[in-house]
Every structure is written in C-alpha cells, then in structure tokens.
Length: 116
Image 1 (spheres, rainbow, N blue to C red):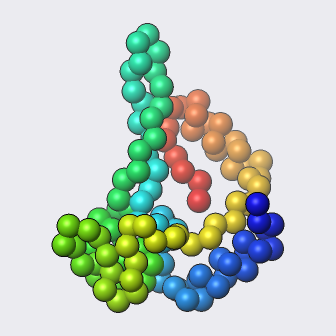
Image 2: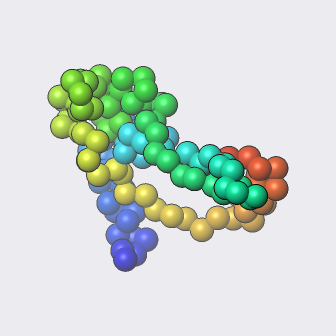
Image 3: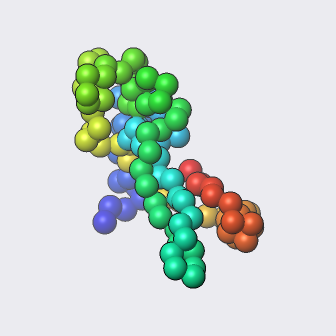
C-alpha cells in the first residue's frame, strides 16, 4: 500500500495533467449507489455503479471535461479516456469528529450519503 505522501504526489500530478477532471466521481465516470433491498425478513444494502450524473450523464468526459463520443462505448476522442481508464488517485484523509457525527446521523436516519 502506498503512503499518503506518494498518493498526494500522484494526485497533484493527475490534477496538473487533467485540471478539469470531475470532482464528483474522481475522473472515473462512475459513482457508487447504495440501495436497500428486502431480503427475506430483513433488509440489506446493495451497491451498484452508475454513470456519474455530473459528467457522463451530461455527455462530458470525466477526465478532461470535453464532449464524449458515444458509439456503443463511452470514450473521449480528445484525451483517450474510456470506461476502463484509471481515475484520479484519491487520498483517504482520516475523518474528523464532525464528519463521523454526520455519518452516524445519516445512518440513523437511513439516508444514503457519500463523503468525498
């Protein structure tokens, strides 16, 4: 596993190369959605990947922000992005007490949130 300094350097390099990458999906073009599903007498959570509503659903490239070409597969003619391209390196910072309290509250209220 890479250390935080290495990840931050990679993230800075990616941001320099692609300053207009989508901050919602991190340049991946997809977001994780959680749905509650009835499972017998209980409920479980199922995660699925959906197109990012901020870029792909708007016809924009997640990496460079230009228009996507769609001919069966999503791809960007300008920067070469496709659905298999690597997203921006993300540095997982430890959550502070305020963020943890929000997550606990959201769980208690059965809300679906994603902390970026």
